[in-house]
Image 1 (cartoon, rainbow, N blue to C red):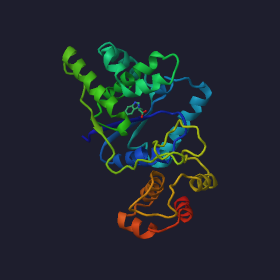
Image 2: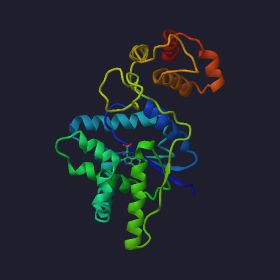
Image 3: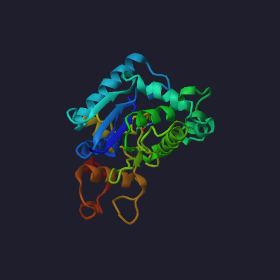
Image 4: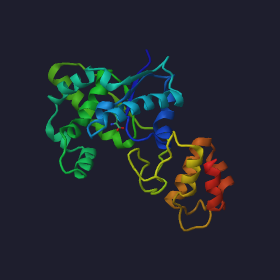
Length: 274
Ligand code: TRP
C-alpha cells in the first residue's frame, strides 16, 4: 500500500502563484507516489469571520483550481472538511487531551491574537482541528510550508499523548517540507512571503488574474537601486522575480545567469511577465 499524504488549504483569500509553486505543484507530483487526501479546510477558515455566501463560492473555486492545477480526482481525494463531521468530533476528543499551555505557545496563535482586540476560542483551537484532520486519516506524511511545521510538531505531541493515555490509536505523521518548491515573496514587499490574505493590489499574482493584470503587477514589482541584474549583488525583489521565472520555466542556475546577467530591470520584468 502506498503511504498516505494529507494536506489542507483554507478556502479564503485568493490562491496565488506562491500557493501553486509552493504547494499545489508538489501535490500534483505526489499523487502518483502516495495515496493523497487534499482537504479544503472551511472549518479553519471560520476561525475568523466569513460571509457564508462568499465562503461557499470560495470552496467551489478552490476545488476548481485544484482540478485545473492537475489534481486528479480519480486517484486522489478532495474533501471539504465540514462535510465530514468526524473532523469536528475528533477535534473535541483531542482538545480534551491537550494542555492549554501547548496551544498558547503556538507562534501563529500569538501573532494572530496580537492583531485582534478579542480573541475567539477557535483561534486557539485551530491547531487541534488541524491535528484532527491529519490523525483522522492516519496520514503518514503532511506536506506543508515551514510556517506550519510547529503545528505539525504539536500534532505529533497530541498523538503521542493520546496514545500514551488510551493505547496505540494514531499514526505518527511526518512533516514534509517542500524540497524544490520555491518560496515566493510579495511583489510589493519582497521581505514578506506572498500571502492570500494580503489586500495590497500589487502584492500577489492570483491564479485567476487576467494576463493583462499579471503584466501590470510584474511591471510594478519592487526591485533595488541597481539598474540591471547583477548576480553578485541583488535585492530581495530582484531575487524574487528571478525565482518566479526559474520556478515556471525550470531553467538551471547556469541558464538563468546566462540569460539575465546585465539585463536592465525593465526587460527583466517584461521577460518574467511573459
Ligand atoms: N493550517 C494550514 C495552513 O494554513 C491548513 C491546514 C488545515 C492543514 N488542516 C491541515 C494543512 C492539515 C495540512 C494538514 O496552511
